[in-house]
Length: 130
Image (cartoon, rainbow, N blue to C red):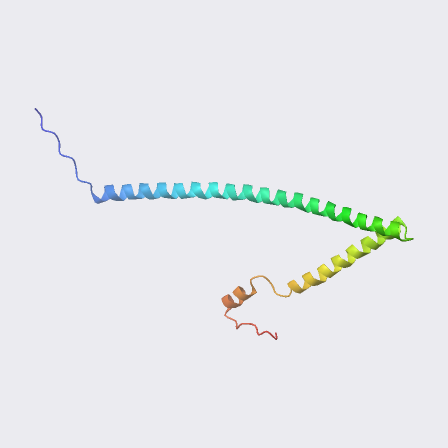
């Protein structure tokens, strides 16, 4: 019988090679996970935006139906004609839109991330009176 060769002890090179192989596989696994998670997030965003658009259309059509119903009731109960009643409804909607725009302008007084940019520049915090 021939003697069996004794198994060779793992050296530092073998351990480093296996470590690099495992690290490469770990990076590949995390990359695949990031891609799949990004795809899932993109699909959910698409669904959310689509559903939001449908909801917006339904709300707008409901609002228009409500305004026409109220204006029809006003036209029926008063001596006001249909075009006059619809004009009043349109002017009321324009006034509400103008009020919303006026309110939205107050939201734009401070730029986004202003406090973060101030900190990064090393500036003092803005005082409430400024």
